[in-house]
Length: 178
Image 1: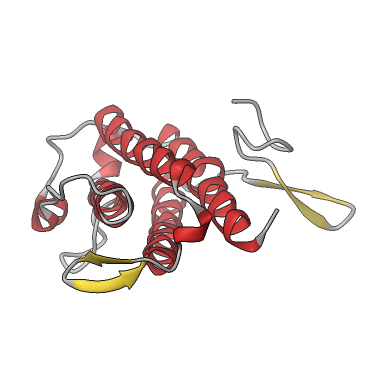
Image 2 (image 1 turned 180 degrees about the vertical axis):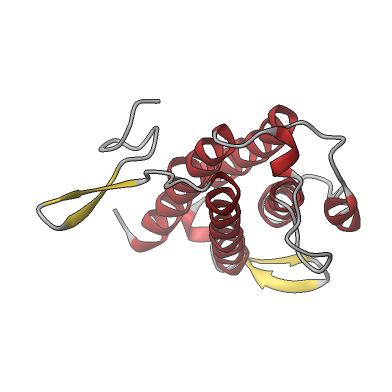
């Protein structure tokens, strides 16, 4: 596989096969109120981060790369509170990731150098995808940390085999059951 195609394939794998399943598993250990818990007023809850991820991936990939209208309301991602259930948050985020995955699946690897306007900035398609995946990874880590903090438990995403960590999250080919 050539490098541009490999980049798109790996981006899709990270979003759909790594980050989203880990967020889904983390939500399973939390009651609804914990999803909206904020450690302090300057920090975000898991719910806010999930809405933010859905808005960001739609803006950068679905709209920026795929050409769909940009209907993001970024401020609302951070002001939302307990009015959205865990289930609805997960549906919102899953739909956004699957929509982004569909855009990436049909993106021509030869087009990665093409320019797009996203958040008032002109970026290449490669830059837009790279930003969106990196951004998703960063906030996934925050969500997992908050879930561990609130649940007091190891989320069990890795198991040790002969001193080597191996993937064990649900949905991963070498991990848990889906």
